[in-house]
Amino acid sequence: MLSSIWEDVKRQYSYGNMVTRLVIINVVVYIAMNLIWVILRIGYGWSDDSQLIYEEIRQFFMLSSEWLHNLTHPWVIITSMFLHDSFWHILWNMLFLYWFGRIVGDFLGNHRVLPLYLLGGIVGGLAYFLSVNLLPYGDDKVHFALGASGAVMAFVVAAGFISPDYYMRLLFLGDVKLKYIVAALVLIDLVGMAGNINTGGHFAHLGGAFFGWFFVYQLRQGTDWSIPVNNLLDKIRSFFSGIPGKFREERGPKVGYRNPKRTRQNTGRPKGNAASDPPSSHQEELDAILDKIKQSGYESLTEKEKEFLFNASKK
Image (cartoon, rainbow, N blue to C red):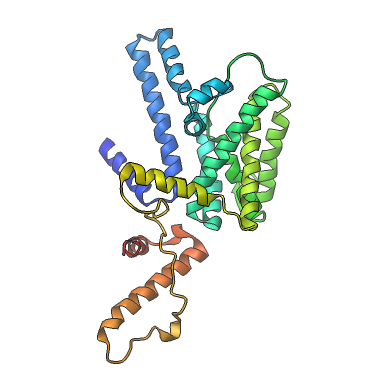
């Protein structure tokens, strides 16, 4: 059974879009951390030492309110956004990421999902750090932050900014326009800043929300913040794998080129050239699939169409 589940997870990761991959990564990290906790608890006989060791392991990957910890653990600005504290914490973050991330991916493209997640989480983390150290609500204790909430709020606001009149169906409320859902979520964090519970977390949420708006605004002005991020990820991937290629070349809808000189009128088979018929048929089917993705999104494709697109992208 476990091997079957693992194969299903690998299949979804390989063929799913970037939102699906991010959800899988977050869930796998959550399960791994909980397994570490169980092993420590049993190994130390349920003593308090197990909890102390577990907290040390978590803090190794968590963003801190102390600048020295972050300076000596520079990876925490990234790793902290993949850690979660409780089941409800990761459940709501992943649900929001899935709901709003799909909207962003459909409208802006799958290749912009990961950069928005990373940049939104980084800005949220910086907002948390600055608020704890510069505002009077903080204390002398060292605090730690974790969770994808800042990154998720970037998707929430970006989706609302892209398509404010997009309808989402809510339980007990029915169809609600996206702009009202986004406004309510941002308002909750604005009010939450006045409280004394998770105040830094609310600042992190608003930091991510701001970047979600900024990302889409800059994109409309002609500045694509996903390009430098994807270029950096390309270099990292090439460095570790030694395999040339683009980070954005995934097993999803990768084929984005269409011959601008080609029209429906000139796709017929040239006289006296029997070998030209198969390429023409292949191109027509590819164009039809790309048109379908543009109109209805990648998820609307059938398994046969996805397989065809995947094979075409390798050529």
